[in-house]
Amino acid sequence: MKKKVLFLLLSLNFSLVFCQNWFLLTSSNDHKYYVKDLLPSSDDDKIWVKQVSNKVEYFPNEKVKKAIIERELVTWKINCSAKKLGLERVIIYDKKGNVLRDLKEDFVILEDVIPDSVGESLLNNLCQWTKNNIFRSKFIIYSNKGGVASFEEFNSVASTVSSEDLDELINSTQP
Image 1 (tube, rainbow, N blue to C red):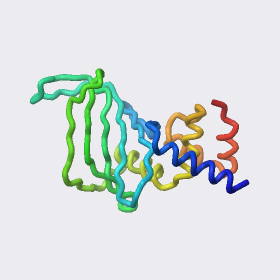
Image 2 (image 1 turned 180 degrees about the vertical axis):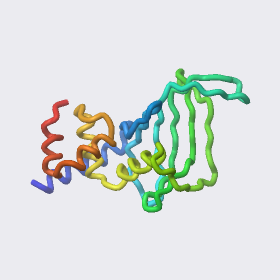
Image 3 (image 1 turned 90 degrees about the vertical axis):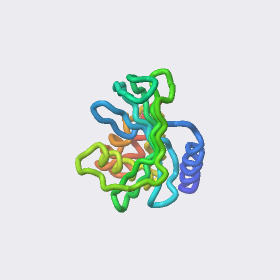
């Protein structure tokens, strides 16, 4: 029975890697951060994050001087053990889906995150996301059933219950 459950989880995790799903990782006052479900390859990984907002930005040297930013796709390079984060690429879109800017760094500098910042919260959640495939799979199943809103909230709930209770909570959640 345990082999069947493990096979099911691994199969689900494998199939989810190839779909286009974004999952709410965390949020701040003016942004929501979604993570693309990708498997990490090493301790020094890159991961796509979609930042969604409705903020107005000014582009003084561009054709469009002012625009409402709908989303930014950002590639972060992370090193969880060193607690460092670096920006590799940012693609900024307006409300109509037009690319306003596409910035790519040829050489990524990993920097320490500032304590108690959005960057620290983002790094902590990204590291938790990348470090445990089974835990991530449980969140995805729970999220797809309409459970908690974000991975950060799921971490909060999961840290207060046993693994068995978490499994029971996931299984009892109706889509």
